Amino acid sequence: MIRVLLVDDQHLIRAGLRMLCDAQPDIEVVGEADNGREAIARAARLRPDVVVMDLRMPGVDGITATSRILADRPGTRVLVLTTFGDDDHLYPALTAGACGFLLKDAPPTDLLDGIRRAAAGDSPFSQEVLRRLVQRAVHARAEAPPPVDGLTTREQEVLDLVAEGLSNAEIAERLHIGVTTVKTHITSLMSKTGSPNRVRLALVARGV
Amino acid sequence: MIRVLLVDDQHLIRAGLRMLCDAQPDIEVVGEADNGREAIARAARLRPDVVVMDLRMPGVDGITATSRILADRPGTRVLVLTTFGDDDHLYPALTAGACGFLLKDAPPTDLLDGIRRAAAGDSPFSQEVLRRLVQRAVHARAEAPPPVDGLTTREQEVLDLVAEGLSNAEIAERLHIGVTTVKTHITSLMSKTGSPNRVRLALVARGV
DNA sequence: TTTCGTCTCCTACCGGGGTAGGAGGCGCCG
DNA sequence: CGGCGCCTCCTACCCCGGTAGGAGACGAAA
Image (tube, rainbow over all chains, first blue to last red; front, side, top):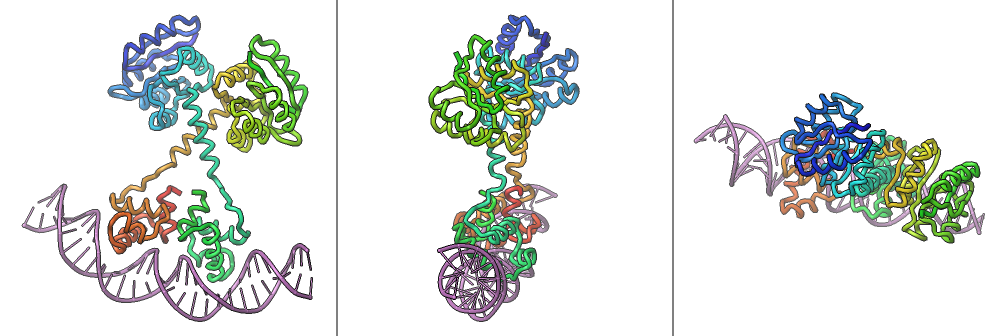
């Protein structure tokens, strides 16, 4: 039996959730809370397996409630259920330790499935949210080292150091060549990359 | 009925998968392939709903097979099933367009569930993989815009433009102020941020 | 009111960045 | 062999970037 605590400031939503859960043989709603402070207190007392947590609430919000609950009992599965899936809600919730993130416009079966998966140690996400999450992760990965081809090896070396913010003199010393040589390389780098100045050159080297 | 194409170079694994799927009333294995080239050909001919794709394969690998298949029929759901869940497998697969990523050590029910969710438009991930994905996304978020405090609003504006790679003259024009004023701000910016030159200043503005 | 911080701009100077053009040495390839 | 591309370095020049120091105007706070 999965023991669930429902946290939402709208009692209509709580009622709907409770009805939904009560109809399931394997899910039991052990308590409700309509704000963050109450949620923290009830979670401590009732020790639920899963907390279904709204974010926007009067007083203590869902994010801080989540961190408090997890600080108290780290094993608790906090599943965020909210109307707003934007980044400003999603990432703080995840940083706070929420294991999943569902949107309220999801079908009831998804929610029940989410509770079961959360209880089983999985991380349920709404498709839309998950897509953004993947996108950002891939994007973060993607713009790691974009090597800018068409350059000679020496030019690439100089470019890397420019991207580090080194001066021509520093680059020359680092590569054991003359400052004028560095200038030569940089002039050709700017022409090849179409950069009007050194900062832009550094930026294209970093794939910006 | 979900029509599935199994792609894996080990026929033992294919056999196991086929047996597993054939026991399901809603899943039908319509074909198999033991390398990327075959996978592309069979996907084009059989038009499966879901492709269960291994990555490490002789000849054409799973990544390129995935992009080819999706280039041909974008609606296809490619679900990666592999032993290796490291970043070098995960991110190329996602960039190639895989909708999900499961590890072979997952229980059979997870795989079947994954195929069903993939077919339904969802994105199934193994818990372990998903955890890393979330971590990276959150991390990417965390070090996104570090606004460098202690600066006046005007300085911040100038800094932003420096970070874009603009020259002093361009910045002056953009902010409708004199070039000397821009210089003044930049001198104070360098002193405040401890940057020895303009490029480093741009880099700290970008949180590097 | 005085004081402080910020924004604005100035002059003057200097050094580094960037351009133009040329040149020598090296290794590779036809 | 001759040619080509790359790396190296040079001179000479200009201008932008950056420093130093000062100054006037304004608004908020003491």
